[in-house]
Length: 422
Image 1 (cartoon, rainbow, N blue to C red):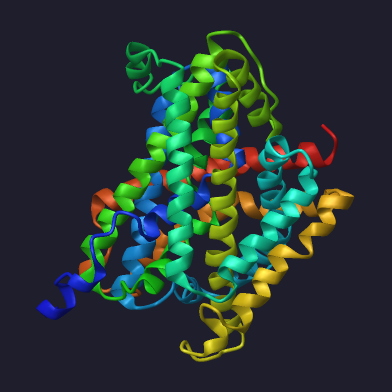
Image 2 (image 1 turned 135 degrees about the horizontal axis):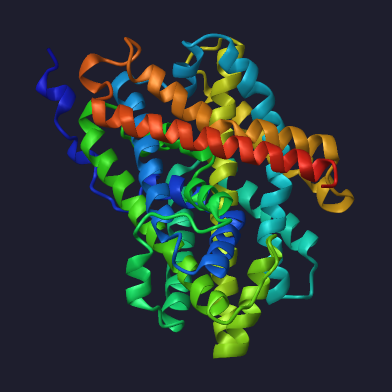
C-alpha cells in the first residue's frame, strides 16, 4: 500500500505555470515546425487546424508518460530503456551522436537566419556561431534556475510576437472553427503528418524527466503538479502554433502567395507582413522567429546533454549520483561541446549526403521508438502498479505509435530522395 507521504503533493514544488513542461514543449517547436505550419496554412487555409490540436494531445500523452515513469520509479527514461534490452542502446548510441552533430548545425543556422535579416552586418553563419556560443555559455555551468528563466523569457517573446502577428491578420473565425473538423484535403496527407508530428515533438520529449528532476519534482507526490505543468505547456504551445497557422492561412492562402519550404520561408513571410502592415510588423515576426529558434537551441544544449551524460553513465556503469553524469558534469559538458563546435564545420562546408541520410533515418524513428517503449515500460513491472497505464492512455499511446510510425516512413522516403537528388 502506498502511504500518504508518497502521494500527497509537495508544497515545495510550487504551482508554477512556467516549468519543465513549457521548456520541453517550446524546445520542440523550432524553425522547421514553424515552416511546416506556415506551409500548411498557405496550401490549405484552416483545413489542418484539427491536426495541430491532435499533435498537442499526442505530445501531452507522451510527455505525461515520461514524467509519470520518472516520478513513480525515481529512474530516468534511459534507465527504463536499458531494462528493455541492449537493442535500445544499439539504436540510441548512434542516434544521439549523429543527431547532435547535424542538429547543432541546423539549430545555429536557424537562429542565424532571422538575426542576419535583422542585423545584416554579420552573415547567417556568423550569427549562428555566436548563437551557439551564447547557448553553450548559458547552460555550461548547469544552473537549472537560470536556464528556466531564459527559456521562460524566450517562450514569452515568441508567444506574444506570433499572437500579435495572428491578430494583425484578422482571422476568419467561422472558417477557423470549421478547421477543427477532421478531414484530409486532397494532397494534404504529408502536411497532416508534418503538422501533427511537429507540434513540440523531438528527442526533448524524453528529456522531460531530467528537467522535472532538476526542478525538484522527484516523487509520486509531484504527479499532480507535473500533469498541470504538462497540460498548460501544450495549451500555450498549441495557441502559438495555431497563431502560426492563422498567419499562413490569412496572409498566404487567401492571397495565393507561396513561400519557400525551407527556413527561408519564414523570411519570405516576414517580408509579406512588412509589405502589408509596415516595417515594424516584419520586425516583430522576425523576433518571434528568432526566439522560437533560440529556445530550441538552448533547450537542446541543456536537456539532451543531460540525456547523453546519463547514457554514458550507464555504458560505463557509473553510480547514478556520480557527478560526471549529472547536470554540469564532465559528460554533460562534453556533449555541449559536441553540439557547438564540430557542427560549425557544416555551416561553412555544407552537409555530407551520407550524414544527412543517417540523420534522417535515425531521427525518423525516434518518436515511434519513444511511444512504443513507453507503452512497454508503463504496462509492466518496471512501473509500480498504481502508476501504470490505464486503458484510455494505452489506446492514445498506441495511436501515437502508429501515427509516428507512418510519419517515420514518409520521412525516411523523403531523406532517401533528397540524398539521391530526387
